[in-house]
Every structure is written in structure tokens, then in C-alpha cells.
Amino acid sequence: MTERRLPPLRLFAVFEAVLRLGNVQKAAAHLNVTQPAISQALKALEGHLGVRLLDRRTRPAALTQAGRLLLAAVTDGLGRISDGIEQIEALQRTEESLVTIACTICTGTYWLMPRLAHFYEQYPEIAVNVVTAQGTPSFSAGIDLVIRYGSGGWQDGKATKLFDERVVPVCSPALAKRFRGVRGLDKATLLHVTSNENEWVTWKDYFVSNGLPENRRPRRNFTNYVQATQAALAGQGVMLGWESNTGDLVREGRLVALGTRPLFPKEAFYLVMSDEPDAKPAIPLLVEWLGRRGT
Image: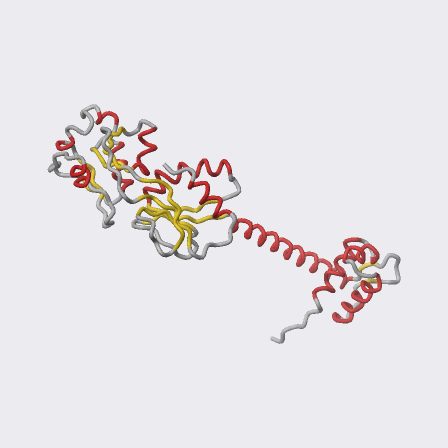
């Protein structure tokens, strides 16, 4: 099929403006051109189509049958273009105000989400998309920020320290009544989270650092911190509570910290921005806000 050559699009815009505004004079003022230029454009459009669009024998000129057909098509077409432009602009505004942050499931659940609720109160126009990972989160397509636990010496971005960590045994209030501080932990049911991370603090690390007898009872093992936390909330045993993940639960009274002998790891939590950050203004706003709300 032979492709039909359309008249220049500006001619359609002139035609629509004349009919919408009612006369050549108003259309010329609206389009910031002279009246003769408007008249020439209308004649050029008729020349391209080979038909008369206006019956100039009447005052004001009336639309011919062809003119009515073209006006309906042009009005619909320009309306669709206008709607499309509005949708594109809305999409651009949405993308500029969307920040995607990657973190572990437990950090996202117990530390980030409660703080985002307050962030939205101050910045309701910004949306934060949280992507969770099983291990250490990394940058990939669409990721603007990552929250990591470690020494802060990563090579793929600029790290801003959020907070230092502290680890202390925690359990449900009902279970806590059986203990006097950390005494008796050697006979408690321990909730253990398995991890391949070298920096991960284990029960053995805690017992050794505090000079406590090791617990040799069978442990209940979990593959992630969220499962272990839910088990602790249900009174199934004692877990090592990281301040980042159980601190709010302790402050709310849902968990109880056993004793006053926490372990302080040398690593900390950091918010990392890519070496090639997006120019979205929402990113530094979130970085600055979270930096002020470390534990």
C-alpha cells in the first residue's frame, strides 16, 4: 500500500484554531501570525486535499461537508495528542519523584518502613519503592540507593553512615519473666538465623564476648530475620536482637531486652548512593532525611 503524503501538521492546527475561535482575526492573534498568513494556510490546506473546506460565499464562511469531516478528525487528533502530552508530563513528574531503595527484608520491614511513614508526612509528593534482597543488596537497573551493613568501604557508591549497631538478646514479655537478665540463657531455647555473611553476629560471638557459658541445647534455625522475629514475638525462644530490627519492637514493649550487656559490632549500617546517581531531586532529600533518623 502506497503511503499517503499528509499536508504539513501546522496547516491542521491553523484550520482548527480558525473554527474553534470563530474567525481569522482571533486565530491570527492566538497563533501570533498575521491574518494573511492564516488565509494562505487555509488555502494551502485546501490545495493539498483538493477540496474546499470553507464556503466563502457566506459571511462568516461556513464549513463544507469535507470541512466538517476534517474538523471532526483534526479535533479528535489534537485532543488525543494533548492527552498524550499530559500523560507524558505526569509520567515524568512521577519518575522524578520516585526513589527506589534496596535493602534486606528485615531492614526494610523493621527499620525502614516505620521511618518512611514519617517521611511521607513531610514529603507526600515523593514515592519510595523498596526492593528487598536476601543477601547484601547491590545496585542494578532502576536502583537509586541501597542500605548495607558493613565497614562502609564499598567501591560502587558514596556511603553515608546511618547508625552503629548493638546486639542484645530479646524475647517476648511473657518469656522474659523466666530470666534474670542474661542468667539462664545457657538453658533457654535460642532462635538462630543462618547467614553466609562474615560480619553476622552469632550466639557464640555473644556468649564469648560476655564470658557466658555456651548454650548447647538444640536451636531453632531460621533462614531470615523476619521469621526469627515472628517466632520471638510468639514466645518460641530468645533471639539476638539487632537494634536496627528489634529496637522499635523493644521500645513498643512487644519484645524485652534481656540484661544490659549488649554486643557492639565494629560494622554499621550505611545508606549508599550510586557513583552515577540519577539527577532526581528526591534522592538527596531522602538521603538527608534518613541520615537524621538513624537509630
